[in-house]
Image (tube, rainbow, N blue to C red; front, side, top):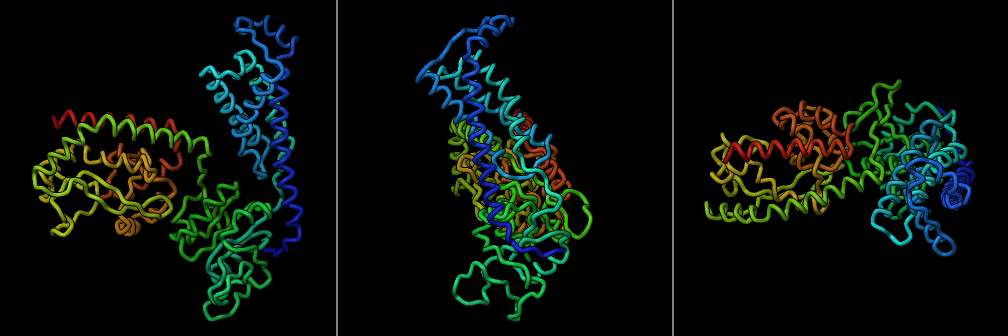
Length: 485
């Protein structure tokens, strides 16, 4: 392990901003240039000779109309290729594939604008030419200006416990720029961003003496950008803390590789068995377009579901009240993404205060047919899954997603960890109304099997994969409803 000063901080920061500016200006210039070129008389004459393409309407734009068309297209393309502006080291093939994907999404967005007959849309023939030019030129441009992967990583340590940081520092193989850590409580009431962490007896962790502080956790975003960080090693004493997952999320947002000590590997998804005591955390987050698609799907699904099922919800509410006069809904705290908690609501299927009765319910997936606390209405609700309808509201407000690992009670999470050591891996995605484990029949009574399906979903997650799970779940609900009827 080599300790190096951050003397090249200014150079790294300037290089990062130069890359960003070059990426934005280059993208804008290439997009506008492609539109201007598509309207050139020679290009239009050539397109007339191509079958099918020549039959498309030949529209042209000049003056202010051309300027507005170029501005709209430029804004769409600039917004779509945002991930390419991050100054992270990439190989040629990775850069090329990412550029092609982003440009394809931009072209789809421009085609959608044209579909709605916007006044300053790109004509179809023009969009075709622009698309071909962007798919060829933009990837080449980003390959040319990309940051080459360096021979040595620019590594920092992020942690909250001096002894843990010192231990992990010794396991780092490579250059270390410094550390990011909360201000030490042993220094006093004054907030010191550049403080050296202290050990419990008031001494300084000796292996950290020569390592400079880069700031507190609140400045992690700035540190990753300013110091052009390649790798962040997480050295938190407890991996279930919000700071751990928050730091991890920030690393992903900036395209920084995150590593963790093997002793903490059970709490995260790792990429196999790398050499040494450190392993790389292997979880590629969805980029913002994927998040948008998933969120839009969640909102549409929940809104339509609540609207269509509102008459049935009224009938269920009346039936629950008529049976025993108790509350209609049953609410409970559940674990959300990154270990946070939220309140989940369901139609009450048990007698009031059921958990105070002997034989307290162990899981939300218990079999209602054998539990004497389940009401007559509750048995029907559970068999048909109609007790889950109120969770559509949790999806609508963003506490849950349609597809994801089913949330458990915080206390049950601790019990599950005793049986399945990697249980916290489920915390990396928003909990869902249904998931791969549910359609495969895995319940909380078999945590290892349930965890295996949940981790498989996390690794394969995507819009189309979600859609397959939803279709399968809807079919299962309809089948159970038919059986009940």
